[in-house]
View (cartoon, one colour):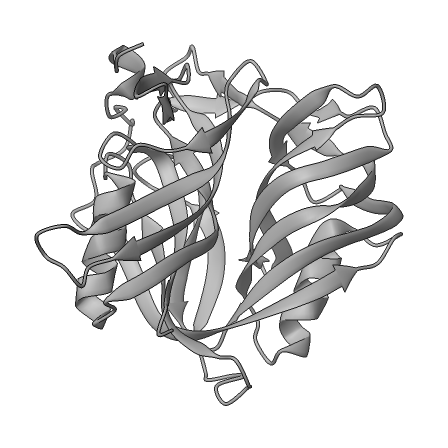
Length: 297
């Protein structure tokens, strides 16, 4: 399939913001953690970030079990109030086994909040996925994850005037966890609609002097995600596709820059797609919370 109307930038109802990316330079401390059964997923992730001396961070969900999964998937909006919206809340048949996921962990209206996309096997063995709500609970076993605690950035969720949807935006914070072992230079960004994601990564790298970098725990929506299939392109049906991504970039050779992005995409029908995302074809639908970490070895 070739890119079509679901791979074009969305038209949002609000005035287009002049700034298409908000970035904050920070340190990031990655740490492999075990999130305990019985806790809400958002609370367990926040606890581990705070243990590293930070208030906000990105999280890679590796595997584990969930005793409750409250979630939704993207949906068409028919009244014009937004370009896209959320489906009604769904409840997974549990216990569920995590396959993969990412989360942005910060605050909304002064309370702990997370923007989380994940895929899982439900209790019937069916692959499901979606936008996971804070009511989701870990269990009966733990969840294994990698947290990336942000030393000088705080993540705040608010309603965006352009999209009229809730988005996380980074802002500078008082330094925390700066000297922790394993901390690396990083930049945390909110990428606006219509921006090509890979181009945003490269721009962040150049601004911060990163020759090599990884993206980790990054989460957001794409306009009909475009995956590599059999030497060509496969377009996930849009207009908005939930995504959870990791990747590697290398700009040391200007004539042959390297990029690789892989992850999970969940379409508006709840179908889960996995694989490599084509470099120049993936466009932000509503928002993308992008963590770029410098790689030095």
